[in-house]
Amino acid sequence: MKKIRLVAVLALLLPTVAYTSDAKVEITELLHQFLAGATRNDASIHQQFWAEDLVYTSSAGARFGKAELMVGVTNQGELSESDITMRYAAEDVHIRIYEDVAALTFTLIGQSDNGLLRFYNSGTLVRGSEGWQAVVWQATRASD
Image 1: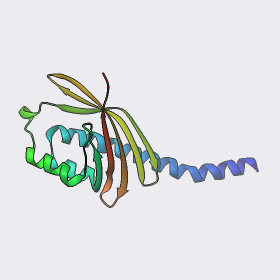
Image 2: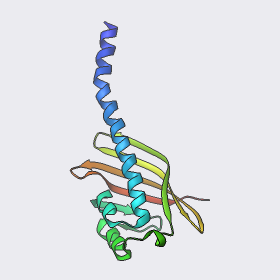
Image 3: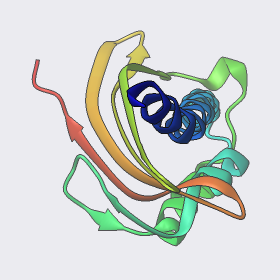
Image 4: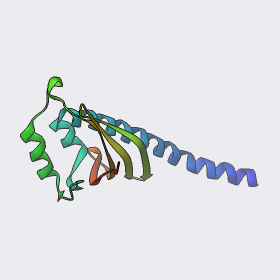
């Protein structure tokens, strides 16, 4: 009888484990695509990554939404390979899935000829009709 209960519990949990694993893979890929696009200042990747109702708190202490963020992106325009001065990557990525909501934390690394910058980033992403998008974001400069 105990074996039957254990099998039943495992059968119920397996779809959740697979769903969580798939979502983590999706979000990890999305994060790396976003950072590659952010390196180029690609407006389309920003448009895809940020939800319309985004609340972004910058490391400088400013709070704004997607519209304000997109103005800064589009005003600068996409960078050619020779114009890129900062390349972004993620380290220490952690993702926790809660059905169609994900908590994402990672260390953002900015590498330039002038050195290395590190920021702790935290985001809440929601899965909707556009896929996973960030609705809340917090960036904090890491102490050296």
